[in-house]
Length: 613
Image 1 (spheres, rainbow, N blue to C red):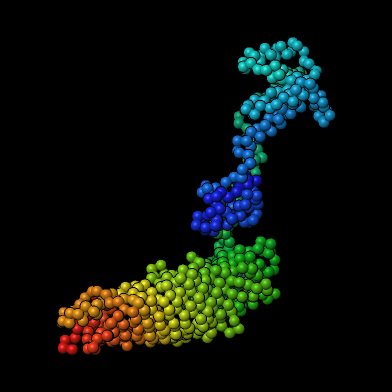
Image 2: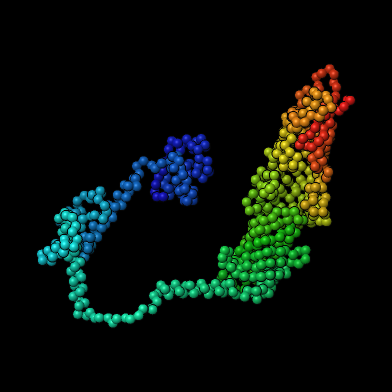
């Protein structure tokens, strides 16, 4: 795209800019706003700082009819005609200098003849192709008539061109005469010294310089390939282990060492183990990128170290600052500028996140400030900062799903806490999911047995989506508010949720219960159970109790118009429901209570009036 083009908004573009409905992409709308009818494409690219983005957006806006070229700019055809005229004028000027002996002798002071002036003064015809311009007339010093006639006859015999103007014929004859005279002089001067070269038999084997250079480059690459892939690196493993151990202050064991160029270049250390016993840190692979000018120095500097396949417990993160402090010592033989992580699992007592990637943040003096890890889709970010005692932990996410098959989709996650002596204290927890908000605090311990305890408050939770996620179905409709206190102890985090216990209370407004029709059961007043239907309510409240065997809802109160119900319901882990509700019609003289039982499965419950009430 020409950088000098100027665009202006159309009426369609002005309307789209003000209404915010036509241009949906943010970068395209930004460029539309910058178009003012005065800035060129180069000016717009300078304002956005991204020429490629600017030109792409301008093409899209022009195609959509939001902008157009400013009126008064030359079209592409007019620009082409100008370029053709400039080329034509330059070619005529070159031909004048070539055919005029006086111009060759004095190129800077030569005066054009009358015929030349006539050509310069004649208007150029823009309708002719560029290659069909007229040559200038012959110079003032004339060639002999015999030579001109002979040249003319030969030209007409060999190249029967169509008839031309007198100026064109005279210029072309002058040019042909000069060329032939030049070759005749060359032949006469070389005639006396010409010699017959001996006939060379066989094929010449001399190699030219380009071939020699190419062969040299190919040989060099071949030698480098053999050196890189067949060098006995493993014989130097003891020395490498000794240098790393001295720099980090921990015993190190390296399983293998090699150098690769493709697909990722660098020095690769495989199956690396730092430390001993419970403090051992296992790394599947370390890729090292050294600074070349320090390879022969006493202290080796590495511009980047990439750790892949790392099992990183929180207890090991606590010891990382000590490793960096050891490397900062002057007697250390290693210096590292940047450390990255790939395919890393970070955990607390076995509970954590897998397949994360990130990097360390170092201060200007090389001290570890933070470890930042992210999921591959960038939906969750974990930041760990070392403290004087323990670690500071923060977790932030948007649109995060714990796994690909999980029904829990968190609109946002915000967690802040600390790790100290095997205890993770969550001081602030905020989760947005199922159209609502969950806030609370929690304490997780992973010393002998895993345990969890805490308090949460929930607001505006969509009961239909929540029921589907936990597997009880979509029987409940409405927004749930409440609070709960929970705790659990188990031998591992995998079993912690099956052992959890909780007590709390909840309320729902303007909702319904599908599969249960209390009004129809009272209307029949018979021993026949009622299935299906819906019970609408204005208010539903009660207590909630979670046990390892199921869910309990004591103290239920349901208000539905003139009907008020109270009772208790229990749901087992296999979703079998049992309970009793007492129904009473308000606003009547006879305040009779009708007891009903609820049984069957939660997805298809049965309601029946108690016999002999």
